[in-house]
Length: 160
Figure 1 (cartoon, one colour):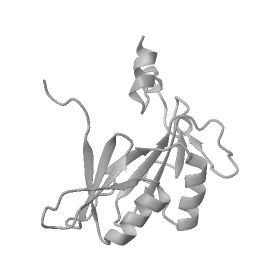
Figure 2 (cartoon, rainbow, N blue to C red):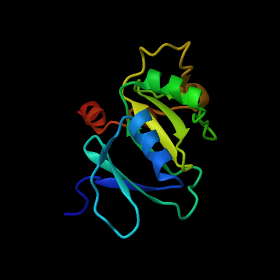
Figure 3 (cartoon, rainbow, N blue to C red):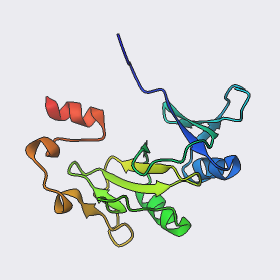
Figure 4 (tube, rainbow, N blue to C red):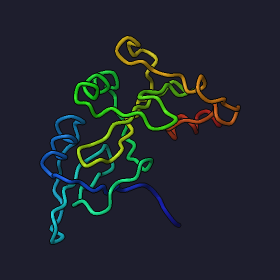
């Protein structure tokens, strides 16, 4: 049968307390029970998926990232700016408007992990607070590219 769904993503952290505060207090994830593996790990609920935090090993890479869906894009953007964790990934703006109306922004967690926050529809976001760059203004989009969506249900509806 093969892969049926994504279950969890594991990321390394430098400071568990600081990282837990980031994911629970800032991003609103739920801290959930996890088993004892003989080394500290912490598990978090991300919708119907999980994020697992484990002790730092290798430093995170510059483009590998965790994509999380949010519904309060504008509020999180403003707070990310206040916290100083919003970043511009080479080739991307701090906040992008995708062709399907979705938005994306990038930030770095306390462990140095790159996080992409995505929102299904940011067309109503206050541009004075969140300067969204239209992706097609930076990069040409083919008909194939214009059909893209981070949300598979939207992609499937468009294919019908």
